[in-house]
Length: 326
Image (cartoon, rainbow, N blue to C red; front, side):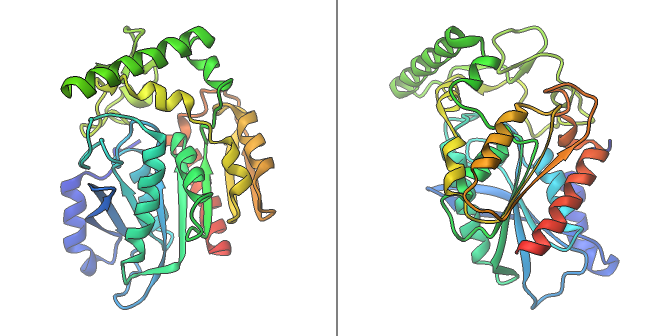
């Protein structure tokens, strides 16, 4: 699949789109708890100045940057008539924030809420029609944010990564492995507090078992897919483990009152957790769209990041949902 639109090409689109009647992209910045965050704001091809449009904030998986799956879905949804925002969470990409490459679900949840605040300042955005779209761990952050922010009018997730204290044991070496990572994180936080030094491990590796993602995960290894230059394959802040492994988004379902669509499959990650979350969602205005696949869990997960079949079906379902519910 073709790589995401690069920054230079996107800037060219923004300059020439009016005459060519195509989607435009504008680089934007907004504040989140003192950090300046960088984003790409996409406009639909039928955009007319003076009108207001429904808007969607798109969030990608953990460790990712806006040029990966968030940007891809943001572009696709903009083509359906929405203004969309893909941005770098604090500590990642072009956004400010220290320590770098520090994965904090709590802070990412807050960044999404501050992205909502940013959209409410734009005259071209219909502030009564702001929605959220999250992929993988981005779904976790999105659902948590929406459960606390009534400005969000609708939510859609694709291949949601949702875990609790039992689920993380399945991926991170059981109880012993989880506790070792939490202890390593606490030690790394102490080092940082003492001298501002950050302890890193690789984000992805097929040879280093200490990597945050250890295995032949093509999306993150393939430069034609997610291994883009804006993303770091070699830096994951060890202090992130405690935040990541102790976050439990499951209780947020009982506070989620806006219309919610969840897209998943038996081949994506932790399918029962998505079912459980869906069943606990407070509102009755909800839908679970289950896709067919022959791939075993969790190998279908990565298809949602950039493969045509999964992206197109997810965008179609999301478009129909947002247009009905916002």
